[in-house]
Image (cartoon, rainbow, N blue to C red; front, side):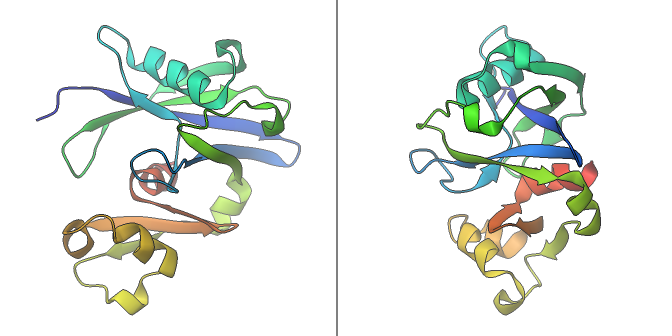
Length: 177
């Protein structure tokens, strides 16, 4: 079993019309290219979960740590492969996402998912072992094509927002919020 810790930041952004979550689209240069996720990554030896979440977010978005106000560390989640992921909720103080200097090696774009929209459009749940392919959204089927046996055995939550398909751990966290 992998003993490494993986930390992610759940960035809340205050907009004029309510809160939104900031999400990333992974670059074509990393594992799971094109997929939507929260900023984060592997904690370095001796690094706290909060420290790793903040550091990774700063590296990926090209912002300073002063733009991040940590709210709390949430309960860890276990991935299908047994890895533990440690979510950290935080307020992201930004003027605009246009000012980010995205790490092109890791992030192709970012977008905001309004919480108000999310309340009206919660993720759908799919039991992949029993759901026929034609009943799975096309974008989700495309993601699942890279996951071999998981496609036939797993379960996942899924939602689409402005052409972005959000599934797996990211959708599970969003659903839990």
